[in-house]
Each structure stands twice: as C-alpha cells, then as structure tokens.
Image 1 (cartoon, rainbow, N blue to C red):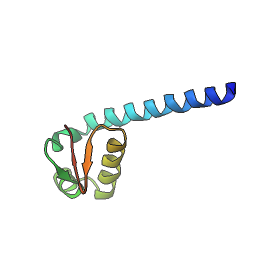
Image 2: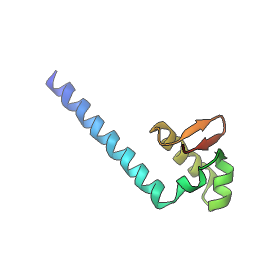
Image 3: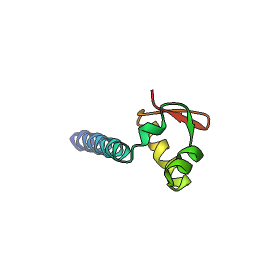
Image 4: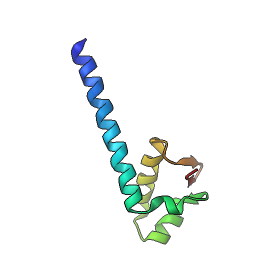
Length: 78
C-alpha cells in the first residue's frame, strides 16, 4: 500500500509540473492573446505561422488542464 501511495504522489507532482510548463510556454508564445474570443486552430496557425497540428495539440493540452475552454472547433480563454 505504501508503494501505491508513493506512486500516486509521484504522478500528481509530475502532472502539476507538466501543467506548469505548459502554462509557462503559453505565456512565452503569447497564445492567450489569440483566445480572447472563440478562435479556431486554423486562425491561430495562420496568425502565428505555427504548424496547425502543433497548435491543435497545444490547445488540446491547455484545454485538458482547464486553462482554456473548447467548444466544438473553437477555443477561448475566459
């Protein structure tokens, strides 16, 4: 049982670290400035010049951490 608790704590810390790194990179790349209104992956990719697949993966990660909202094909930061 002790090993399971230790493993759970390890995963929690790892997930928090990854979420923090994602947030830092979002700020560095100024992603939130594109999300003040519902915006699609294609719109962000066109405005930034970033690869559309990478933008989508990044936005999905932000959404899974509850940093942004996803509604159908658009993303928004409240």
